[in-house]
Length: 162
Image 1 (cartoon, rainbow, N blue to C red):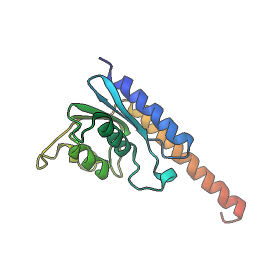
Image 2: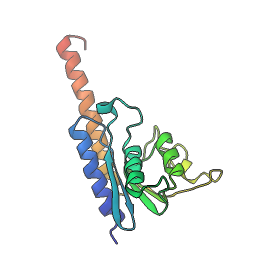
Image 3: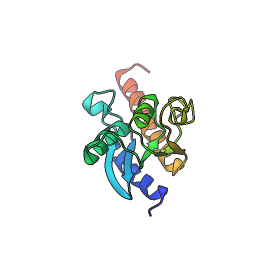
């Protein structure tokens, strides 16, 4: 059986694909019975769809691969802690376990701001493992946003609006 670190590294590879096309570098992998059934990365900017998060795209692909909306027994690996929208989809799709890399202090709903994945009032809860390859996942996001800020600053300087 492969480790959480192994699958998170694959999610990081997906995140790098997002970054290559100018997307926020977030990647996701879904594994069931030791097999990868879905891979995805953010496509929100490219598709101009607010729901094109890596997790949702991976869940959709996994449902198609299994021919079922129920992803019982599946594990989702994602480089950034899921937001409220993605956490809701995880609960509704019955994913058994969620492993994430970096925490999201502004939108994390798997333990940081709240924990929708283990809310006992829902009819399903997911096991949560946080901090897997956290430094690598977090650094990738920090570097991405630092580059964006630098680009914006340079554009202001060029246009004469410091």
